[in-house]
Image (cartoon, rainbow, N blue to C red; front, side, top):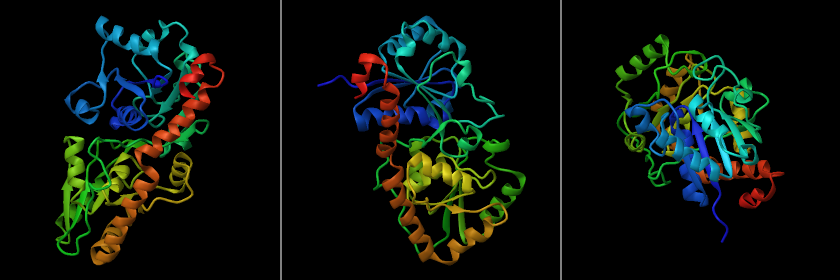
Length: 339
């Protein structure tokens, strides 16, 4: 039997756990040998968010560890940026450009941590340049849209919310960061006021969640009805994936460009059943769900069905697999490892 494909994911921050989840899914669902190293963004909460990640620092032990994995890798997948000390480790590996080299952006332009396209600043010959298929393709139009990968060991179609026809509508708001800047905005004074009104309305039970483990958050969604992503930027985030996987109605402000990016990334013509709104329509749209519990129940079922048909980790890993295979062309005998 052929040896499994060896993949090294590198990032400078947790990125909501996305690179680590992709590596874990590649191992568990496709039998790859994948690992994710994080070269910065240290701290307990980041480790909690990205449990499938190995944080590394600029020391001799970590240098040996990372260089060994890189030297054996078939694919090196860089997410956003990595610390300069890790770039030097890459440069020390003979034949680094003979591997399949993938660069992927997860963050917007003109914001931390990348501010702009850094792919040309790394000094590697990329086989593919990717952008997460949310708001990012409009900011990086020359990059290929790809979906994020939501994969946790405990996530299954059975871990889902069941529609209820009495009691308040349970709404979860769980911003991963308190950002109020440009494309990364999760809140604003006006939106905070809307949330306060929602929390004061006896037809709703508002649950604000921060600084908890991903498993705790998944458990909360499994007994909720609605997950709020954000309605300020025209985009959406991993919260939308998480809510749909749990069978929640997902509220976001995805605009037509974001929906087009979603379609390209997931390779589908079937639009996701987001409850799309903006700040002005937020209260009215939530009120519709509270007034029509059958509508709420049907929407919850549609979200759950769509996620597990279109957005599942197994399907997403297959999309990346095709990109890796295409990038391997012209790399000599290492192509056999991906074929």
